[in-house]
Length: 290
Length: 290
Picture 1 (tube, rainbow over the protein chains, first blue to last red):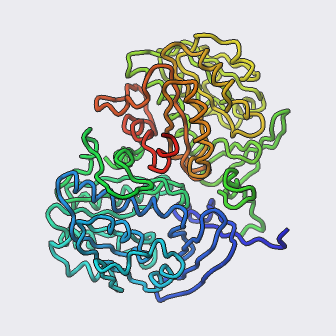
Picture 2 (cartoon, rainbow over the protein chains, first blue to last red; picture 1 turned 180 degrees about the vertical axis):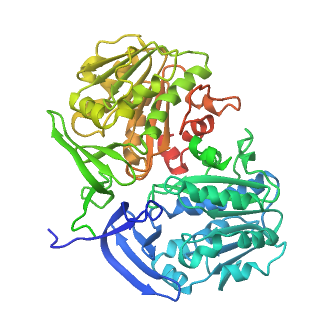
C-alpha cells in the first residue's frame, strides 16, 4: 500500500464565486512545474488519462481525450468549406501552442500554410517534450510558429485566411482579449470572403450566461454564428462548447441530408453525423441563443 | 470562514480497479442517510446542483440536471413511435423509484397507464420527501406503483407495453440482473409488436467494452438496436449512454429530414435536433458497435 496519494482537483470556475464542485485525478508523477510571464504550467502523469497539461490550475489537455477537442475545432470548419466546394489553403491558429490543432489541419493536402501564433513559448517547449503525439506537426514545413501576442498579430492581417481557429485558454488572465469584439472584428478582416473562424466557448452547462454574451457580441459582427459542442470528459461538466462564425457560409448546411464528410484519414471522433449532432443544443440553450 | 468543509466524491467505477479519478461536490447539508435490504442511500444538499440522491456512493440524480436523463429515456422512444403514427398507451418503468421517468411519460395524453416497478421502497419514500419536483407524478391516477423485483415482474408480461424504460442503477449490486439476456428476452415478450425499450447504458467514454458487450447481447434479441447519448454533467465523464431496442421501428428514422417532435409541453432539453444528434456517436465507438 502506498503511504501517500497525490490528487489534483480542477474546480469548476464558472459555477459560483467559491469552489463548489470539481473533477479530480490521482497522480502517478508530477512531471513538470514551471512559470512564465503569462501563466503557471504543471504536467501530471495520471492513471487513466495519460499525461495531463495544466495551466493556472486548469486542465488544457490529456493524452487520452485531446483528440475530441482537436477534431472538433478543425474538421467542422474545414468540412463545411469542403461541402461548399472550397478547399482551404491558408489557416491560422491563435494559441494552441500544444500543436494539436495544427496536427489536425495538416491532415488535409489542400492546406498549403498554417501560421500558429502562441503567446507563450513555455507551452510549445513542454508540449514538444511531454506530448510528442500532439506537438508532432509543429516542425512540418507547411507550419510557421510565431511566438507573440495573437491580439497584436490579428490587427495586421487582411483577407488572407480560409480558416482561423482560436485555441485559447479560459477567458481569464492572458486570454481575456481573445473573447472581445475588437479581436473578432480583426478576425473578420483577416478572413477571406468565405472564411470561417472557430473558437472554444467554455461549457454552456456551467456558464450559459457566457455563451449568451458571446452570441450577442459575435452576431453583431458575423452574419452566421452557431454554437456547437463536443463530449470532453476532462473539461468541466464533460460537455464543451465551440462557436463557428462565418461571413457567408451557413453552419447549419450540415443539416442537409447530403452532407457527408470527405476525409481520407483515420478519424477517431469526427464524422458527418457527429458534425450534424454537434449543432443540436438543448432547448434551454436554444432559447438563450435565439 | 468555515472551520471545516464537507466534500463528497464519486469515483469513476469503470476506469480501473483502483480509484483514479472522480467528480466532487461541496456539501451544504447531509440531509439523509439510510440503508435498505438492497442499498445505502444518502441525500446531500449542494451549492450548485441542489439536492443530490446518492445510492451506494453513486450519484443517481441532482435537482439541477435530472431533466436531461428523464427527457432522454422517455421522449426518444415516445417520439419515434409518434413519428410512425403510433400513440403509446401503456408504459412500464423498471426501477426509476424517484419518479422522474414517470413524470415525463405523464406529459403525453395518449398514455393511459404507467406501471412503475421499483425494488426498493426506500428510494420512493425519500424521493417523495426530498425531490418533490421529481416524484410529483407518482400519485397520478394513471400510475400504478409496484414495489417488487423487476426481473420477476418481467417474467409474467406478454404483448402489453408500447414503451418500457429500464431506469436502473449501475450494473453492480441489485441491478446486475437488469443487464442480461434473459431479462431482455422477457422484455421482448412483454412489448407489443411496435414496442420499444430504452435503458441507461453507462458511459462509453470510460466503459466502451461494456457498451460493446451490451450491443452484442441485445442484437441477438432485437432487430433494431441503437445507442444514443446525452450530456449529464454529474454522471461520470459527463456523457451518458442509452440504448433503444425495438422489434420493428428503426431508431435511425430520426435522420429523415421530416422528423420533428410533436410536443405540447415546455421541454428543457429534448427537441428534434437533440433527438437526431443523440444517435451521432464518435467514430471509435461506431467501430466497436458495428
